[in-house]
Amino acid sequence: MSTETPQPNPQPGMAERAIDVATDVSHTVGEVAGGLRTAVDRLTYAIDEARKPGRPLATVAAITREAPLASLFVAFLFGVAIARRR
Image 1 (cartoon, helix red, strand yellow):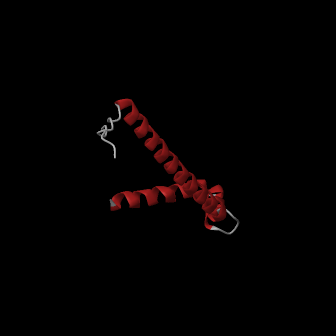
Image 2 (cartoon, one colour):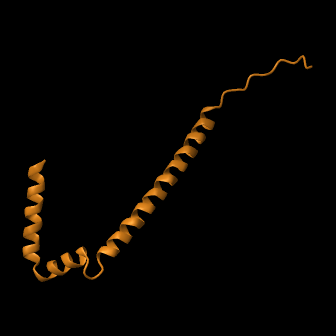
Image 3 (cartoon, rainbow, N blue to C red):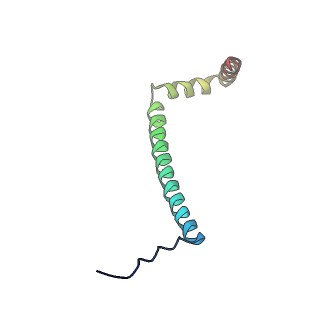
């Protein structure tokens, strides 16, 4: 049996707390970056699939090449319709 009284643990200093917070932020940023990278990869894959011949983006691109002014007009009307709904 020991007769010594236990010493209380000193509180961490401001520098130690700042380092802990910076480490936590660094891990969080890394996780967010990984999630964004995954989302970008999925979106890139979806766009590549949609650009294959016969798919929707390939069709829209072909129509836009053949009639750019008509496509611009349709896009404008679509934008106006969306803006009026809000």
